[in-house]
Image (cartoon, rainbow, N blue to C red; front, side):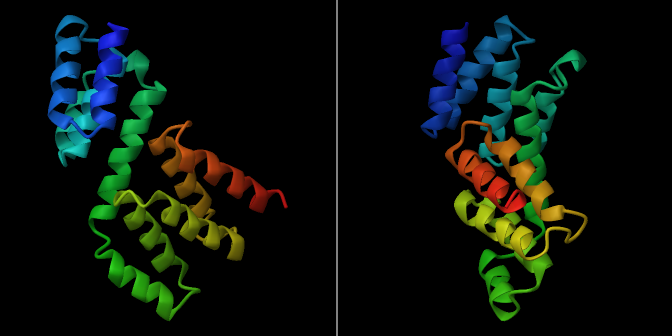
Length: 173
């Protein structure tokens, strides 16, 4: 079954949401508690713009799997998507930051909106700017948001790896 899940992951990585959904659903028909298939199906649903359906899929996981890294990553991605929904247009947020570079809330909102539009490097840059200028802003909010991004993107994502390295160099300099 691991090979079938891997083919679902490959379909998802290629943007074949229908194919990925079908593969993960087939796995779940045979193994309803397969955590990788649950997470994969939820990611496909979220990528298709259906956060509510993704949440319902995550609810299929047994309670004992609440701390599973794959499921946690999907939950973090859903939270990110929901947070970005009410922030407005990226261009408007960029204009606010350009008008007042010390407006950390506008910069924070811009970072969340950028991340939701899959502009990961730019999102990390904005949050690191806040951390560099005021580490304690909003009760360490920029660092906490970075950690949520890293969780949503997964530990092997190139932006997670680079972002963690850059954050460490700021915090431990």
